[in-house]
Image 1 (cartoon, helix red, strand yellow):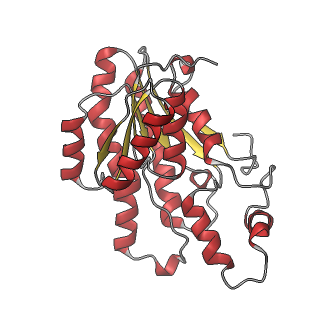
Image 2 (cartoon, rainbow, N blue to C red):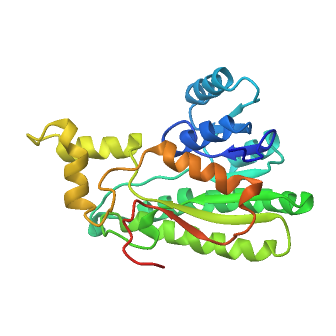
Length: 264
């Protein structure tokens, strides 16, 4: 399926690992010139090299920057003044007891998961409107609409992503610019694998049974009863980023394996 993404320019934040990396790969597969972002230059360089090798007709570049930092964002804006597609994937999560979450932790999650992406949207949206094409996508989570209670500081920020995307979509009426949110369910990223390692490190359960046990006891509402793979999110995000997705905006799009039990 041709998604008409050849030679489009897409910035995917936090794209050296996990869902962000998977999105970058799937978009490069469609001919997009992707901009890889992460905090470590070596990791950024590695992914850029992989994409250049696997998709030689594309022209990926990398920007190593901690986008939670205003000065680092300005560095990005200088290097990448315009994009066709912005995918705000960068974020952090950590299961925590509510009483252990300090004000500093709340502020850190808000800064990284909300304010950083908002700053990027604020910079790139006017340019998208000026060229009458653009896609802004926030990567949220099913935690935005069905908080598990395991990490309230994270769930709060993901709900904010939904509200922000809806608000920004109101600024794009009667244009070819759309703003949407994708809400993945539990996905087998490096971060989730580490979480499983920590959860089951003292367990006698064989490692190949961890995923099934986790889904049974912690995500029992899931209809697929497995962790989603990053490339599944990547393929969906590539479609949402494409010109073919012009019929919807301001939407909260669930890719959660049926985890959320409600219709809306």
